[in-house]
Image (tube, rainbow, N blue to C red; front, side):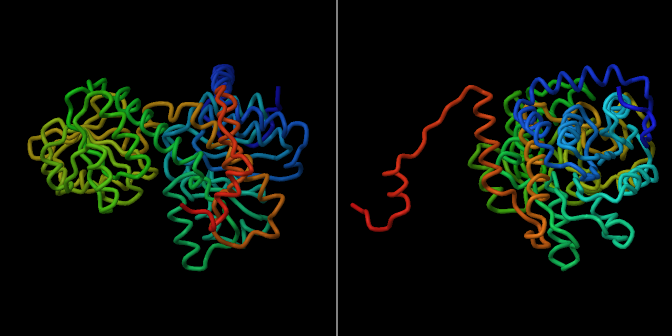
Length: 422
């Protein structure tokens, strides 16, 4: 058992035993990460490296932290969202594994940023982010926090958007690999993970029947696609709102109704945002909504719903059950879930372990890549190297007992030739 003397700020150390069992359960469905952990344990490719991670503190994240530690890294972890922490997992990481963890479910904004700064006090060499809040704090005070950093990774779409904006202004101060852009991440984690876990969170919070409901989904990126597919699978009538004409066209071709939010707001029963932007649902939309409408967010930040605006137009509000705040707007009841934060993590347990297996395998291998090639990486936002992406795909297929074909030399030659035709 690890020492309790490591730095930490968690809710309850006595929850450790429960957390250990849940971490172990998640590990049984993360075979790719487990295989990397075994290699890391032998080779110690991260020996002497300090990693500051700002991620959702869940059972799957715990397995990533343990994998990095097995590779020789000193790891410090804080939450990337005030409501996504699983307190028993935080306790297990501190008490059993000796990983400095700063995360309490429901922490206020000041505590949230205090925890981020606590992870940075170790002068990390690598940052690992989910939403780019860690990177944002570093870039707002680079002299204090960035002196030892050689690179970082970013887990989610929202964070990549922020980092590309930072890079576009020539203000990025170290290279970062956009893990979210890996095919083995966004095609599976964003689509299947978000699709299932979002509906899981809403179901746990409300106990609604999805069949026959009009479900309005704002955004048809990979997350929106997943949510739409799963809602339809449960019998919902799905409406998509979009600002991108190509994605809107794709939604139509996939068999969904597409219309502006102004129109959809008058007919929807459940509204789910997944845009990565702000005010996808605004006050004019909420005023239009039917009595009893349910609003949830599956994007990283709680700005996709105009919550201050909702508070302004409501005459009263009350908590009707855990994770539901009911606002009275012009004699109608509007139900906001999980304070407008990530509903899949705030009201449920986030993505299934088998999906996070690939996402966190990307994280682990990208950290190893940064350590190997830090001197060659330009200061910009990088894609995950293709060989890492493909290796994770191969490993995942292998763990599923699936084999695929290999090109023959003749086929390879044909695909690289311009001379062969009809």
